[in-house]
Length: 350
Ligand code: HEC
Ligand code: HEC
Image (cartoon, rainbow, N blue to C red; front, side, top):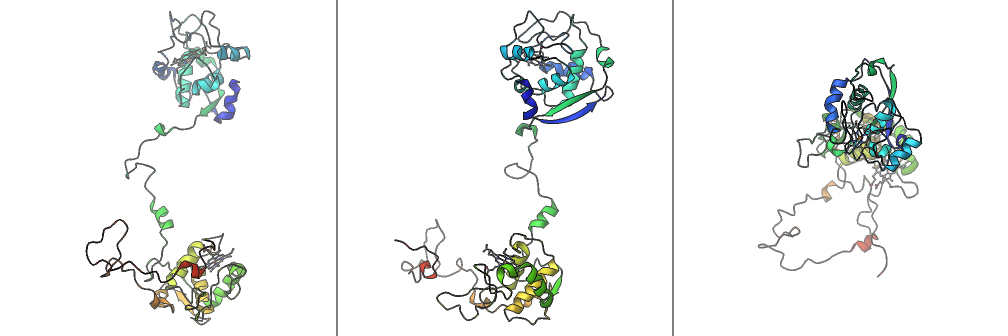
């Protein structure tokens, strides 16, 4: 049963030679955490736990005048002996090593500290005499160092932020996220590409879903045309017919396309493909070179039909949620002029 521990813990075999082994002097200090339950040395008595004289290097549970728990006795019957490896595993997480043991002690999490304690234990023979040469005689051994899962308490609380969680993002991490591009061209990366190059790239990366001419295959979005359909009941809203800014096209393709393989294109590729999308929408010639200098100057046909969101400045403004209107309120309740059902976004039904 106590062998189960190997399945539960992360195990890294490490070779400790006597040279690197942490010393028994440190172990003596660390034994302080055991002293509430164990005595060791001359005249050591059993407390809640047995005297630990001569414990290392012999079968477990050998103090006849001490009453071990039955799970402990079972482990002894199964052949448990105390050597570096078993003591190390036991002291790391006693209650996992022998489930149900009377040694109700969470364990010593630090591997080096465990070795120091074991070295210290090894210095005492059965009679409680300190014979500090016992540990030295031993050959280097392979020790299984068990690193139990870290607990929240093992981490220092960061002193930044409101919640004191995590760490501050590195500049390069911020840069990787900070890729948005504004209509005025702010955020555009250096680079350029023309529509002809873009056609080739588009055929390879985009046409399988969006069609060779941006007509869309199956139910994938249409990317071109629809110019005179905006007042129809079912307008064809494409980049060319509907989108207000070319910066959005560049940003969107660079950030999210090809679908399933986003961020795989170089910035030059995205300039070229964006130029080709302009060409497909009859907004540029095929040799047109799009770059970081001229992108913001290109106007899409539907830009003027978008208005800035000025709800907060409007004279008869609608109030934001939770706000009580005190002055210049709408005289009457707003009138519903159209319903989403017309656009068929609301499912049929009562
Ligand atoms: C809360 C009390 C308590 C603490 C603290 C404690 N132990 Fe124990 N220990 C026990 C008990 C009780 C047993 C007997 C286990 C049983 O019968 O299930 C035991 C058993 C042992 C044994 C096996 C003894 C044998 O005869 O085979 C070793 C070795 C041991 N403890 C080492 C340590 C060390 C080293 C520390 C400090 C790092 C420590 N213990 C801390 C209570 C404790
Ligand atoms: C595997 C299929 C697939 C590929 C390949 C693909 N896309 Fe898309 N594309 C989509 C899907 C799906 C959407 C809609 C995503 C959504 O609305 O969340 C989309 C949306 C778009 C849109 C926005 C269309 C609109 O009107 O909303 C553009 C622009 C676009 N893709 C360009 C490209 C470009 C350029 C490439 C090649 C670099 C490409 N896509 C490759 C599937 C694909």
